[in-house]
Image (cartoon, rainbow, N blue to C red; front, side):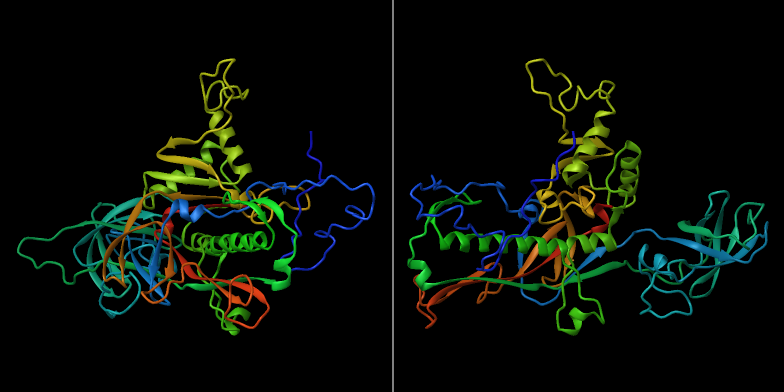
Amino acid sequence: MPVLSSPTFALQPSFNRQVTATNYINSENFNFLNQYLPDIYEAEFERYGNRSVSGFLRMVGAEMPCASDLIKWAEQGRLHVKYIACTTDALVNATTATFTIPTSPTNQTRTPLNNPLAGGTATTQNNLGAIRVGQTLFIQQENGANSVNAVVTAVPAFNTFTVAFYQSGGLPVAGLNNTFSIWIYGSEFGKGTSGMDVGTQSFDIYKDNTPIILKDRFTVTGSDMTQIGWVEVTTENGASGYLWYMKAEHETRLRFEDYLESSMLEAVPAASGSGAAANSYKGTKGVFHEINNDGNVFSGGFPTSLIDFDAIVQRLDKQGAIEENALFLNRAASFAMDDFLAAQNNYGTGGTSYGLFQNSEQMALNLGFRGFRRGYDFYKSDWKYLNDPTMRGQGTATGTVGGQINGLLVPAGTTNVYDEVMGQNAKRPFLHVRYRQTEAEDRKFKTWAVGSAGGASNSDLDALTIHYLSERCVCVLGSNNFFLFRN
């Protein structure tokens, strides 16, 4: 039966010390002048359980210090070269042809940077200079209908080259109205000839990110600190006791810790000409931003069939082919994945053999999967951040669940990168946080007290103010190995 829309979760917490319609207990409920006093529970009921949504980055990555406003690293490019959408005006059955490589962003970002051909300069930042005289090519019509082999005989310009075909029929289709994919598979030289006229160099993809400064504060007056108004509480980290103002301080700290993680997930850099940039805010590249722009995206919400997941595996084959991967999903995506995995079992249609396929009548039925193998190993986990209704788990007016992000695939293990600060290769987790730190200053999580109450004595303010600060950013290494599941 449908879940009723009321009562629902509370979505109007008051961060400020002010009376609102949602946080004020009025005298009608607690009138202590009445002779019939209410029976009041001392303990605060944990209505929403553990409310913190942090922990994801600590679980899948690491934290390490940095000492600069800019963090840069280099990632390996492709070892082999392939060009797409190449054109020629040669006629059908021509024995030679001159091809032109389009200077499109696709051809500049998918393949390595090499020394340019004749007509270019060594500083040209694209990869259109990999083809050289003597190399052998495989040329395929982009609709897959025809293919032919050829050897490069001349390179007349920076992004053009002339080939001679090996097959007797020459070019199988006219170049007009056709495009071709071309990749290098080897080379051939005659006896007593010189070698390659130019060399090539490896290509590194340079990426960077900038830390941002996050702040928060909590304030309580000295008079309020003396007031008898204690409540017995149990907080998310296991602390318990009669705390009043410290409870609010502790929740401020927990909220700030959540913001440290959610900022690393949600942040975007300030675009040139934006209002944030005009006001000197720079932003930072969060996890979702990086994967959405430089990773893999499944835009159908989440996989609901083996065909969908096969498409994901085939994309991973073309990227880093990491053997083990972790899936962090919201509840709807997790259930959908359980359903289509169970459907692969002959007895799964009725839902009686999920997970534990030898269920007995005394055994609790397991209707979920923790992991599976399909080309690679995948381990599935629920992600609280995507389920929390005050974060990414918000519903819509029509009652649909989710939000835009439904899950994230994270490769397990580490990768080799060149750390420009250290000046050497280093092993780093695919996903990790960098925070500012030197011998004199540690800005990973900085807190200090100001005032003249609660033990502080560094101000004439009759209050206690606790400040929080952190300066950090997240590094997504090999974002082409990540998958984002979104609507």
